Image 1 (cartoon, rainbow, N blue to C red):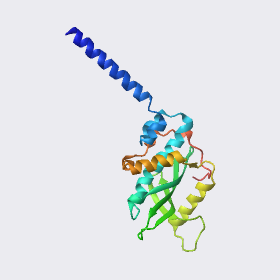
Image 2: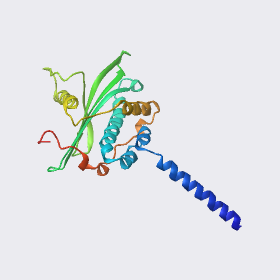
Image 3: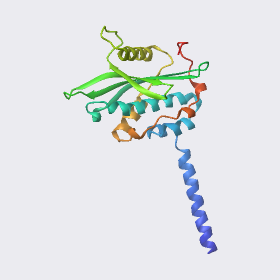
Image 4: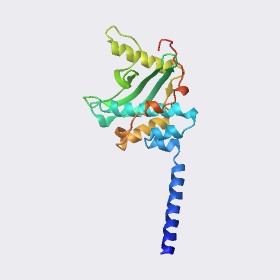
Length: 205
């Protein structure tokens, strides 16, 4: 019996060591590719956290955007821009996002456009503004369209905006193809390090 106990303890020890090794091999990059953004954010260096936050937000909004297409299965993310800020005086956490998406329309033709999203810090939720093709103002633009164009303009011009790189865009499209994108959740607000976020470009934000 003593030999059996020692043998079992040895097996358990080996298994624990293997688990520790496998866990330590889970780099932020690998976790992001799997859609485990909260864990990736926790493990990452401070210099990488905002980049992970950006991909996380775009991943969730990609899932929401795909469901709004005429043919959700036609979704392809081409580019994405994420802007965030934190106003320390007013304790306001701001976010905006623009996704450049290709999908098929009701005629079956592939079309690409910018999809603008705005975060509401009061309700801790995102809402869709509009799909747009440019920042040019038109006479018949409604308030949502004007806001969408403003968000796109900020995304293309502001230095603090994070543009997803090719690997990040590939991560999101791969998760969509694997049908796992719907399970991705936003990193919880209380887990975000606000001290790493830039101060807003506009003082009234």
